[in-house]
View (cartoon, one colour):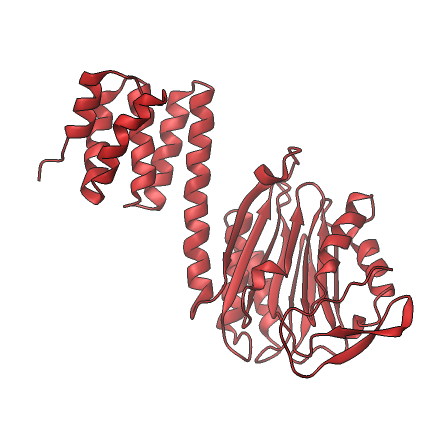
Length: 336
């Protein structure tokens, strides 16, 4: 059995749990729960899998959430053992269901009583465990295509509030998981307060390129209002997803789909110069210069360095290397 318990903070007092398969060598474990409330979920329509979490602990997103497209999603928390994430995905990838995978990992873990873990596989099968020695209030609810779990809560209504919010929420998987986190905080949340949050969503169908399968991967490591900041970042990620879709449509020579995607991105984050600028560049390459000019002008008002960037694009073939055109693009300014 692998050495699976990981201490992720510097502590002056250490409790020991026997290391599986080696009773003579004690293994250090954190004496404080690292994480608090989370959700693992699957979108039954798209097959997307996700995890979202909030905690009064630094950088919760580096440890709790695990997900792989077409395989499953895992949240490992409380007296956290991060290897439940890696090993759980390995087991599900080998063909084990989420319940089978969790049972196998718990059976080999002498620290199971202080763990809180939830898993969901690509078929929507759910498994959750809240050990008897989790600090109260602690509990979980496993529903259809999701599990919500929490420990060290202010009260025992938190996971019920999360469950109801997720089931009632509309929108994509990311939006529904955010609703669950917000409900947890509104119901009282972590007894210690707030500090960090994270949200991870992967595609329903694996592409063979894990880096493109992550539809949302955002983290708030330290913030007085992490859920507010998490929503902002999810919204920004959603806008960049539209930008990526627009770029792909350009490659496929579907100009109208590309422009619709760029407009959707700009609507989500008005005032973002990057998105407006590349929308304008796309219009230039479609031969729609008159439509592009006001967008260039808008960007230059925000930061004139973008005007200095424009001629450089021509040098690498991103826009036509036409001096007259470059002059029009760089000298255009919005009329106030």
